[in-house]
Amino acid sequence: MRTLNRNKRTIHYALLIGEATDYDEYGNETGEPLPVYGDAVELKCNVSAASGADAVQAFGNFTNYIRTMCVSDPNCPIDEKTIVWFGVDPTDPHNYIVTRKADSKNGVLYALQEVTVT
Image 1 (cartoon, one colour):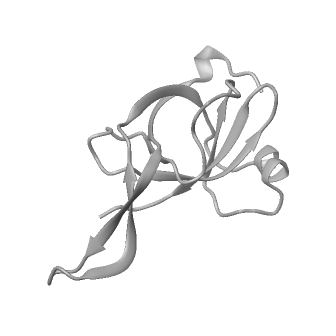
Image 2: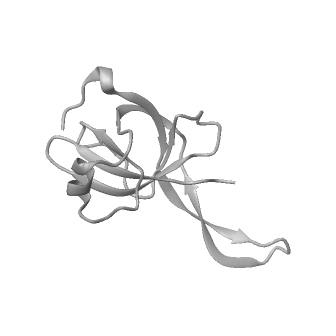
């Protein structure tokens, strides 16, 4: 999986670093964990326009994604549950989350699911 520089697009991502306790409006624990993410990091990679045949083969029958992202560095720290900003500023709410990862010796292919954060 090699990516041409002219095909690379800028994204930002933040890794999941832990969980915090959620509280309701009365100060009681809800029992639901809140994910805690690190700082946004810029990355240049190849992002698909939509899911295609190559992505379907890489992830099998898994179709719960909108785009795929290809990174030519097999040591890329992005994993499942990483949040991604694509086409929006990293100061805005994120608009994608990584749902699957398919790695090889030469690179990594990620499945991105679009999300709406309020």
